[in-house]
Image 1: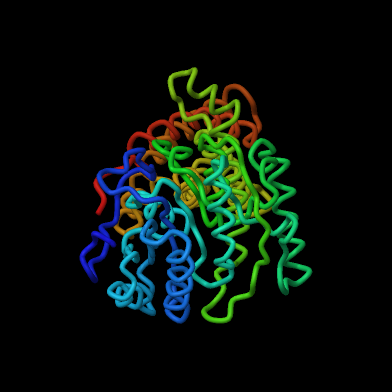
Image 2: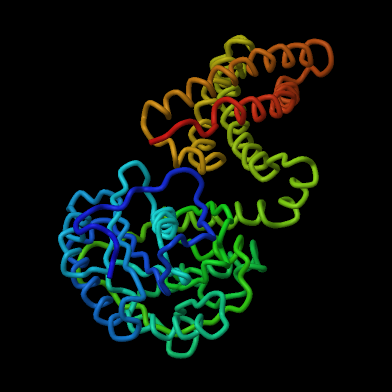
Length: 409
């Protein structure tokens, strides 16, 4: 029986996305997290189906944890109303965080199981496969993955475009991160079980939906078992798959590559300097460089507006600063912004970033004029040298002042 009071909601963990090794006084075999958003029409059937299945196989030795991202359709309220009927059900309502991957980890953080799992809340993952995965982990595997690409697996009615995108994403992953993607046939799977010990006390930092990449890439995962399943189309609710998920997937691959590969090891050897984050900052800076150069040309070139060089540089630099802020906020420092999503916090970061970069812009203008008037009589080369001279300044000061974890709810 559950020790949770009827109808009570779980408290939402805060801080790092890290699963504790300790289970406390309450230990069970299996904890299954069901992340939800706008699944009101599905959640009762999901809970009923999973409860009936697990009551037969491991009665009383499991828990279902629904983690809802404050769905506007009241999914969490429906789930909460089911708790008296299903004593193994627990419900968490998140109001200050969003995202499937972080929802799963928050659920694992309050879980009591020696085996942790995740399943979609839309009935696209066939529940009976759970038993095969539980059996695999119960034998020797650290991780059991439900795969569409092994015997017994497949998709029901995907279009050619969706199949192409899925396979293309997997191929891209094998190129960027072969050590992770090469270990599983379906790295895009969101249906798997993992031993708690394989991910305990490891800080996870996922992006988007593909949490399996994070588990394999950062966890201490030894043997991996795969079980075939057929991905079913949803009958209720709405699909969450958009182009944004593919962009987040690529972003996640690159971040894992930078933080777990040779660059990550190099960062540790030189005192923990965040090389991966600095490289992302640098790539964003390149986009700002393009914006800066284009605007400078439009403002200063004799064939366009022909404004004075200094005035043109100030305007082009500010536009580049705005461009860089939005990219850094959503990519370079995404792990911080995920915990500070209120508009006031974003505005505060923007003002800090702007002030720091404006200070850098003053230095930039000084270097630009120095180089242009005394070294190289080419405004574009001089501008490039000036930008390079303040990149480290901007990164280090922003790292320490603009994007830092402060007190959050």
